[in-house]
Length: 254
Image (cartoon, rainbow, N blue to C red; front, side):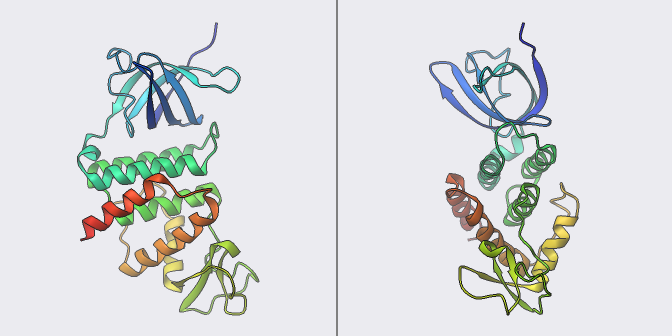
């Protein structure tokens, strides 16, 4: 008899299949990202109800996959639907982007408990406070750090020497910050040495803090350029949710 597994999880997305079934992508501590087949999920209010909605936290019960296929979802118990998130378009857009970025940077079945903690903290923040550019930047920086893709910040990525500042050439394709002697050629952006210091402090700070952190306009603008350059190097293709998020945030700004 096949054993049943059980864990708290965050639903990243779902896909309706056939007349009543659903394929669900979820992230669970100790298991990482998994995909499951929920038979009759759109009809069974007793077994699943609203527990399989994107961005919800739920306790999921499933049987392991056979030969690399989908796990079989048996039932789910809703923990938090995050209703506040669902009434705010920037929050919905940022939640969708965060889930897609998590999928893009971490392989299926790769247990990443700190990633789970970070994603849960972001979704809770979005539900309580709405979606904002600072929340996006904080999440991106921390996720890049957890993925191992964060570039060199406070020393030259090429010669490992110091950075004179106040402006620094940053080239993710060459490993990160570059001193004047090593800069030149290839794609790069300019960021301030103060911004690099702020980013470094963020990465040393609490993983799940969002509302408590304030970013200056300069740190926000230059941090966004730094992250965009880094993601271009590590994503196979642009995320479908990114352009929608950018349009929504631009409309909010005004």
